[in-house]
Image (cartoon, rainbow, N blue to C red; front, side, top):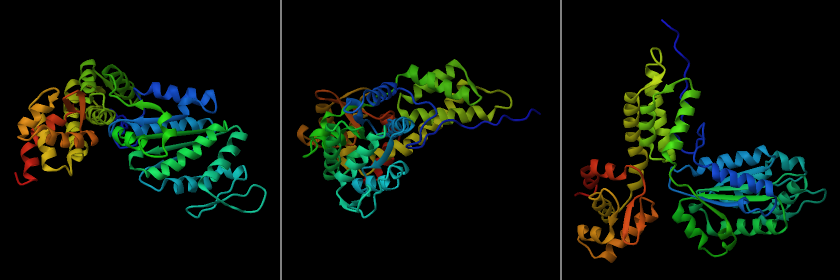
Amino acid sequence: MPKPLKLINPFKPTAGMTPPVLIGREGVIDDFVDGLDKGPGAPSRLMRITGLGGSGKTVLLTQLGDIATDRGWTVVNVSGREPLCASIQEQLAHDTQLRSLDIKISLPVVSAEAHLGGAAEELSFREVLTRATRSLTKHGSGLLITVDEVQDASHEEMATIATSVQYMVREQQDIGLLFAGITTGVLDLLNGEGITFLRRAKAEELASIPTDEVARALRKTIEASGLHIDDDALAYAAGQSHGYAYLIQLVGYYVWREGRRHSRESVTITLADARRGSEIALQEFGSSVLETAISGLTKPAVDYLLAMTEDEGASSTSEIAKRMGMPAPSANTYRRILIERQIIESTAPGFVAFSIPFMREYLLQHRADILARYGA
């Protein structure tokens, strides 16, 4: 009996994990690299990355941070779900590059202590950032701050960070700020007070990835792992992903796993493998993404979604109101909620559609169970 191949699944369907091949985001990466090359004040050093949950925002932030690290920059990664200024300050305090430059930042939460060849002094967040950035720039490096889940961030803290970064840009220092979040949340942030500087950020909206690019990436990843895939299986798997970053990894993971089952006899993934793997992937996608998206909705909001399932494409908002048996202005209240949650999107004036792949199918399949939660 031949010795089985040692095969390791290359796909990583876990939130935030960097996939082996990052696809469909080459333009964003090129813009960022150009920004690093062009020097202080380059537009792509200030960037906002938006998209649906699962569209790959966190993965992209990680990739851009790695690029900056490879160029010798200090990179500070924070999340809008934590105290931003304190976290940035703490990471700067422990940064080995800053310590080597004799920038030492101590840790109370709201102040910092810097030793620059003289006595200790209490510093504001802005002064901490200023001294760190000036020193890094002087020594041919720079500071990059990335903020993930920015829709959850304190507007006051983001204003503090924005103001501090703006002063460094005006001084022609090497600094960058990337922030990512759900589209509606980012737009709400940009409409806040004291955030004018962030409105200048280069906008990068992560749309769905073209099917042909998905297919090329799937083939490359599968073949690098030691398996092969038939053309029809590849086309089917790529199509099932709908160009949705998380679903690409999920489909790839389970399709690859089906192929590994028979790797002693054949290392080629067949159409049957692709169908079985995709089915499992979509079941998991339903529980991990689709169910999470609708959890906590009020009954009228759920009714709005169920009314949309009667249409195979875009739905007329006036027709939805009729199906719900309520005036259009009342129905529009739930439309706005669902758009803010990025479950649906406006496709044209008076029309909406589901913004997450397979949401319509999930609602149709689980309609009775969903309504039972509300006693219906």
